[in-house]
Amino acid sequence: MVFYFTICDPSYVVYMGKDKYENEELIKHAWPEDVWFHVDKFSSAHVYLRLRDGDFDINTIPSDVLEDLAQLTKQNSIEGSKRNNVQIVYTMASNLKKTGGMEVGQVSFHNQKEVKYTKVETRKSEIINRLSKTKEERHPDLLAEKMSHMKELNRRERNAAAERARAEKEEQERRKKEAEARNYDLLEDHELMTSNKGLGNDYEEDFM
Image (cartoon, rainbow, N blue to C red):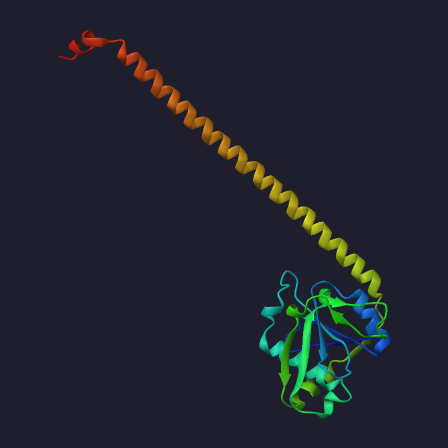
């Protein structure tokens, strides 16, 4: 079971697991462009923001979207929901690291430098109430959805690679034609200079 929410910008997809076992599935099947949110140093739900198609930069998340995600994450932490000045940690889902010795739902990071933080000073009821009204329970096939998505990404990459190869070939042909044209011009100039040399003074007298 996965819970979905509609945030201030409905073009984003936001979802979270019901419990730690569902969180484990989300860790495995999150998309590369998903951003993972969690309350720092406390137990909480794993909340995910799916970045919009073609915009996979965690640094460009709008401030109002980030605030919605931070408030939602804080609210879904037993301990964090009771506190002020709660730190929220977030990173790309591809940066999540899972090892065999970890407990269910527990993660670490491949690269600590790619981990970001934002602070929630206090609960904003207007945001929580708005998000709660949009909560929707679904039972998606996470594996099938991810496989389909990865196939689409691979298709796009193949098309992009083919387009790059076509553009490179056209550029090579253009450069080749330009080089041939320059060589032809040089050849004509050389032939003209050679023919003028043979005319001598008689050639010049014709114009006197």
